[in-house]
Amino acid sequence: MEIHTRGELVHWRGPAPFHFVSLPVVKSAMIQKLAPQLTYGWGAIPVTVTIGETTFTTSLFPKNGLYLVPIKNVVRDAEQLELGRMVSLRLTLKLREASR
Image (tube, rainbow, N blue to C red; front, side):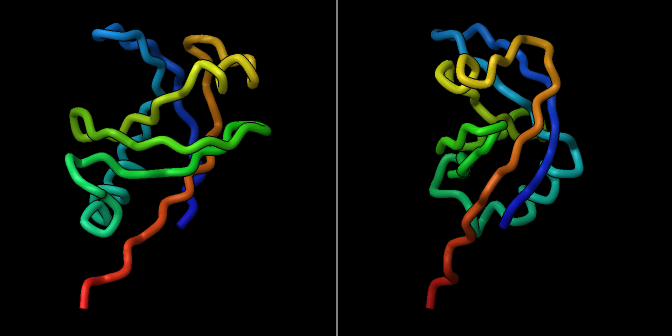
C-alpha cells in the first residue's frame, strides 16, 4: 500500500534530537484504521519512505492522533531538507497476512 503526502519538517528535542514530518489528519486516520494489520507492537508501524531520490526504512510513531515520520540526518543531508520546509513523501506500508 502506498501513500503520497506532504508535511512540514520539524525538530523535536528529546533525549536525542530528532526531525519528523507529521502526517495529515486524513492520512493518519486511514493508517489508524489499518494499524492492527500494520503494527509490530507498541503502535509503531514499519514503513519504507521515499523523499526525492532517497529511500529508507523507519517506523511511524503515533502522537496526539497523528503519525510522525522520523527523518534521518543522512536523508536530510542528501535531500538538502531544512527545518520548516514542506516535504513530499511516498510511504510504502506492508499489510501483514491475516492469522489462520
